[in-house]
Image (cartoon, rainbow, N blue to C red):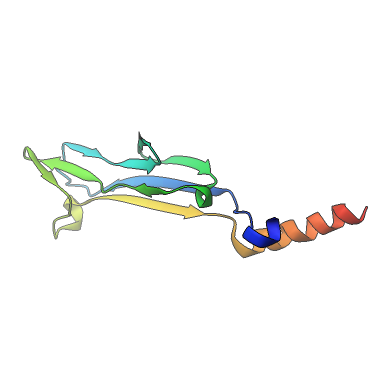
Amino acid sequence: MKEIIGFGMPTTCGYSITMGSECEVSHFQSYYVQNCFAVPIQNNSVHHQYAWSFPHCTALPIGILNEKIITENCSDPKKDINLVAWGSSGGYTYMKLRRKNGSKSKSK
């Protein structure tokens, strides 16, 4: 079965919220959405999952500025706010090591 459909690697995702020194946004929110639930994203949060096995996404972040909802930054980096998201599954090097170690354990 593994050779036919393969198995995914565990994925680690992280989020950071960065703000310019003169940012005036009074409220900022975004959610990690998975199947039928959503989790609010906090600054410097990290989660681990088998991301290959289900649909998921990071929803569009919104901010509130002067009682208006904003979804894009202004042209001044000192006033910007950003949600930085990253993810990695270990990649090719990890998978190669895993296969090598797996083949050693089978030969014992």
